[in-house]
Structure formats: structure tokens, C-alpha cells
Image (cartoon, rainbow over all chains, first blue to last red; front, side, top):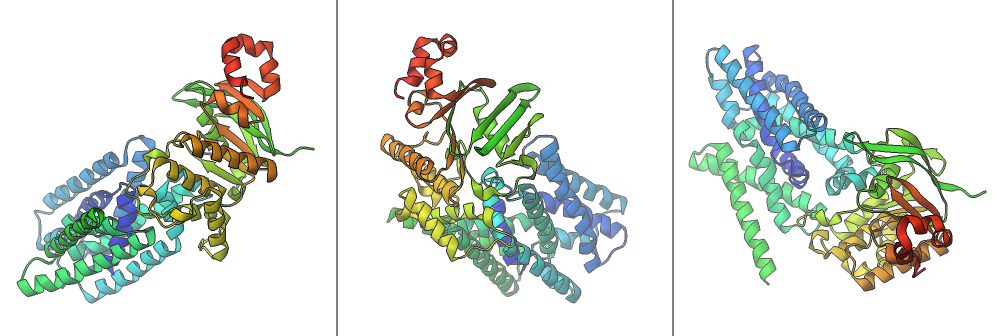
Length: 254
Length: 250
């Protein structure tokens, strides 16, 4: 479900040149998790406590870009570095890193509790449903914001929604692949799908399929070969990207 | 009494404190075919963007079909072709059909699903722009001219009453340009579509547009071509040669 979520959102983010927002928000998640751990939140509550901070940061990225009239990547850089700095500062205040924070950094799917699975499932279904309901508006804004605005689409509202959905997805995905690797799960299946897709709908469906294959086979391979799960998932994703790229080159040369 | 498709009253817009448009007041009557010309930086595109609500003027008012722009919501009645579509991401995966169909969103309410009527409207728009055969091709793979026609088809998909076109023929070859102008003329004469188009091509504007709006941050001239060509004031403003260039093919 997380794979489907990241992969579907990834197509919109990559085409909007917002690929690195996942990375930026993941860094903020690091700070938020440190804050939650400092206040003594445990297990599922750590993620839940991180959600408001990450949503607020996502809003901050939008507002900094808008008000300071700077490009999105610079706004992401500002919020992201602030997130990391907060995390390091809080970890230092708490007397150093502890094992919990480490599992958030690199992910550990086997440590996910039953409550976390349930909450992740509910939130993932909600996010996927919102994407499905706003699909045409999201496509319109991704294609061209001004054309979308002159077709009556509330561009600002859709942009805010996209960033909020990404923030929620980043928090949900951190236990699967870890904070350090979330952006890869947002970017790799989407870029692989964009190599092959012959329509926007196909791009979304293909991205979701490739994301699910990456996560499922990554988990299986990591279990079989006793490798770190998050990193294995990313390697599988990269192999699929390489295969898609080669397939595109082959198709073009025919 | 003629209906105004667009009414502008005392419109002023500034960018970084510099006036780009100053005190623009005019009415575009429904059924008019207005060519907007002027030098670089004269505010032509900015005026179009203000009308569409993409730029916010600091003074003045705009009404579209009698409704103040701030509360205007019936975007089905307006088709828009922006400037600079050549910047489109070449790896964007949408097909021509998908792009044209997006124009139908203005007629939809949440959750904005498309149906068979939308497919029929898309077919008609593709046919009108003579691009039915490329409906399933990716827009990023098309030449500049075909992309332009795709976006025009998108602008026409709702059979709008007002077409706002910002330099619509820049990417078109001469044959396609002629056929595009013929299509616009047909829409204007036979369907009563109001056309408002910005161009740098002063020499050919007189072939198609019935009225001319010459802009240089403020309105220098707005009226019929005949008036423009006979105006001594305009001769002194443009010089005889400049005025002749605009008028000679009309």
C-alpha cells in the first residue's frame, strides 16, 4: 500500500520538478521523530506525533517559496536543513541517539507493530482515495498551472493538497524504507514508468505496479539474503529503472 | 443593445513598482475580432493575463460577460491559448486526447469525471484543428506546430464564446498559419465567437481582425481598421510607413 502511494504521488512530483520534496520532508520527519522521542512518545505514537510537524513544514515550504519569491528547491533546502538541525540538536539534548531513532533513519519493516499497520492502512487508503478523486485536477495542474486556472481549477488548493499528501506519505513510509531512502521510493518507480508510459493514466498505473514489485521483491530478497530491507528495496527499484531505460532505448532504435 | 464580452475600466497593473498597464478602459463587444498589437514590453500579454485573473491589477475593474472577474466562474465560455508553450516538458506522458479533454474540466463539478459527451467534444475539437490522427500520440513527442494545434483544440473544446489567444501563430508554418486564421475567421463569422488575439505580426493583422487595439502601456488606439488607417493622428504617431505597414493588406 505504501509502495502504491509513493509511486502514484511520485509521478505528479517528478513532473512538477518537486522530486526532492520527499527528501526534504523526510529530513523534517527526522527532526519531528526526535522531538516525539524526546517527549516520550513510543511506537505508533511517534509517527502520529510527527504528522503535524511535517504537515506544518510542508506548508512552510509552499509559503517560503511564495512569499520570498524563491524556487521550490531552495525552499525545500531551507526547511530540510532546519529539520535535520532540529533532529541533531534534540538528539544531543536527549543525550545522544538511541536505537529507536536509528530504526527511523534506515527503516525496519519487521519492527512495525500491528497498530502501525492498521493506521498506515487507513491513512494510505484515504490518501489514495483523495488522489483518485482529484486525479483530473492534479493532471491539469501538473500539465500547466495557468491553463488549469483558466479552466476553473483551484491551483493553489491542489498544490497545497499535493504537498500535504506527500508529507503524510513520507511519515507513513519512514518505517518501511527509512527516512534516508524515502525520496527514492517516490522518484524511482515514477521515473521508470515515465520511460515507458504512452499516456498519463498508464504512467500512474505502471508506476504503482513497479513500486509494488520493488517493495515486495525487495522485502523477499532482503529476507532471503539477510540484507537491510530499505536498501534492498531501493536496489530493486534502481534495477527496474535501468531495465525501463534500456527498454525505452530499444523501442526508440526499432 | 450589444453585449460586452469583456469590459475594462481604469485597469492598471505594475510589476516591481513599474507600471506595465496604466488606466486601460475599453469594451470588447461580443462577436468582435480584436487584434492587439504593440511594441515589446507594451503590456499585451499582461492585459490578457489580467483579464483571465492570472495577474492582479492594483486598480480598476474587469467584467467578463457582465460578471466581475473576481466572482466569475463560468470558464466554459472562455478558451485560452498562452504564450510560450514551447517550454513544455518533452517527457510529459499525456496524449493529445488527454490534454484536449482537460479543457472540459471547466464544465465539471467535483469529482470531475469525464463521460461520452466529453469524448465527442474532444473528437470535434481534434477534427477542427485537423489533428484527429494524432490523438493517441504523446504531446511531448510532437513538433511545435502540432503542440500549438493541440492546445488550440483544448481552447476550443467547449466551443467557447470568447477566445483569448496570446501569439497563437508563432510556432506554425505558413500553410498551417493560413488555415488557423481561416478557422478563427469561420468561428468568428459563423458561430459569433469573440476573438481577442495578441500578435507581433502587425503586417498581417489587418487581414483578419475587424478591430485593432494598439497598446503601449496605455491604449494608443482602439477602433476599426478603417478609422486607424485614415487617422491623421495615427499617421503622426506611427509615421506614414508604419501606419501603411499595418494597413496595407487590410
